Image 1 (cartoon, rainbow, N blue to C red):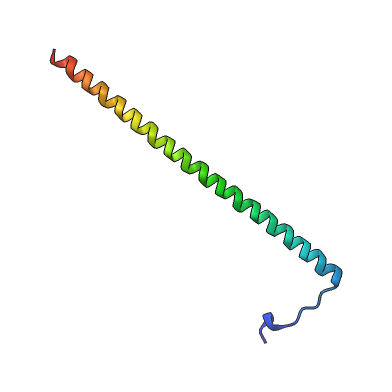
Image 2 (spheres, rainbow, N blue to C red):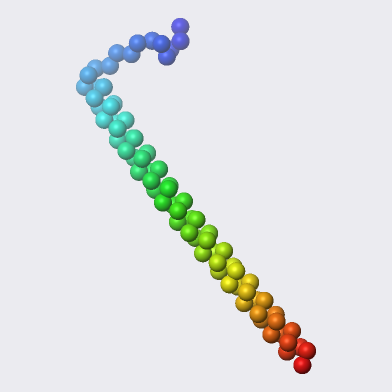
Length: 74
């Protein structure tokens, strides 16, 4: 016989404690899910800022190379 089909008998007080524990776990999981969502948003913002900084640095390098090339021609 499959163990999942066997009836389980639990005292009412024990059931209430288990139900309260499950509710607490569900609340904590919800909080964890929200925290992960916020972390994901922060990571996306950080990635965007890093891309912007990389573009700024690349632009500055390009301008320095142009100036260096102009000075070398003189």
